[in-house]
Image (tube, rainbow, N blue to C red; front, top):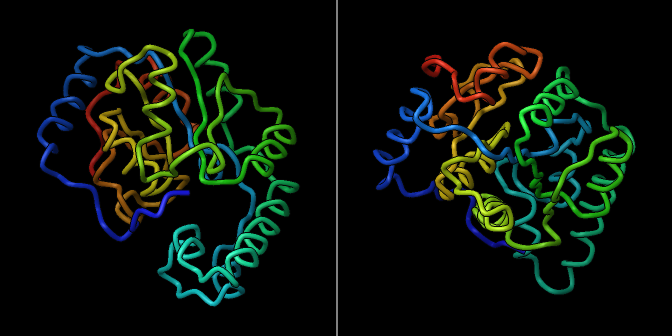
Length: 234
């Protein structure tokens, strides 16, 4: 499991390159060939109460749960994972699709784009969530498969398997971890705001596009086809 300190933002030494990538994409110079999506908070709502999880684990409000558990002493490690797993499984059993997701995934299929999923959730909780919500992906990478975001491993692994460059890959996510991973991989980031002001979301400045929700089918279509206009200002 990844032990990257989530409080450390990725280096912005390549920000000019990433900005150029966004401009080229918005100008139609690049066409997407693949889509990689986050799960909870992006495609589905599982109602996970991270405040309750942190309270039960004795963590501060700013702590990152996975990384904090990894830092537990050996005698507390098993309990930490058990608490998180219990909450995740409860969330998986009540997960529901976010508005517009069915149409979003149908359009990806119609455009014949590769589509994968990356999540910090466990493999079992992810499988139950996908089954409950009727979702299928070509490949699914969870925390049980390799380093977790903000590490870019999952994005790079999916792109390698498809033989597609990260620069031709759209990463859809709702939080810093997703965007930081996409930024580090050199992908095109889409922040799914879910009715929140973009500037209220940690890492929003790493996004090439802001999407209010998947219910905005016109903007979804433009982004997936590579014809979206300039990113709206936060």
